[in-house]
Image (cartoon, rainbow over all chains, first blue to last red; front, side, top):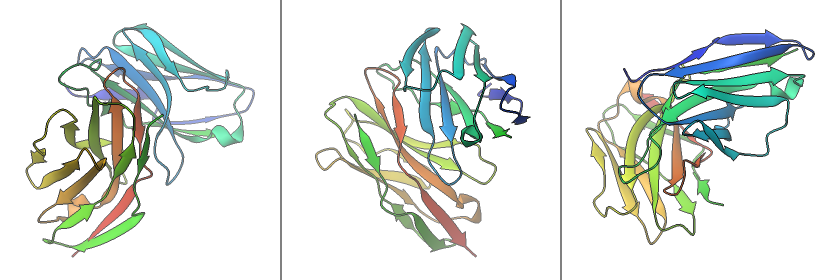
Length: 115
Length: 114
């Protein structure tokens, strides 16, 4: 199983809503990532969890709150978003970097629209 | 912080021909990993090929191969016998060996023409 599953695939939310994006993998990976991708742009790193601990936070606004409840799950809690936060949110997982490297496997993403 | 540069926003190639996509990077790290990812319109990011910086031998995966020049900080992707299904955005990515910090270049949109 080399799949990273993201739900939902599409999400429309108002600026006052609270919603969560979910990501799940069963490859035994201990590193999980959130990326934000705007149209025709590369993915931008938001957060990295390593062994269920937040290891990288790219100065993301606090309206985005990540959570890694266990080694298979990664959530991104959303609150009071702005229209400019509309984007494709990609989750990825990999081995924690070691001698064999750590290529990341990506989910299909959640297309988020903030209205 | 490391930066990844892809200087070709768009490229096209005839089916069955060969095309090379360029990537350069800037880092002070000695140990790192490099990747090429493909993102078709379906938006799924798919790993094409990977290269460990400590390996001198260039990686190959079927029709895909890289030219890794560590001193020049260059990592180009060659696609041989191009197929229509190769049409996609191609992103070059850099990952530090110390952590899982992975960054992408701006991408090259490749179109394979019949």
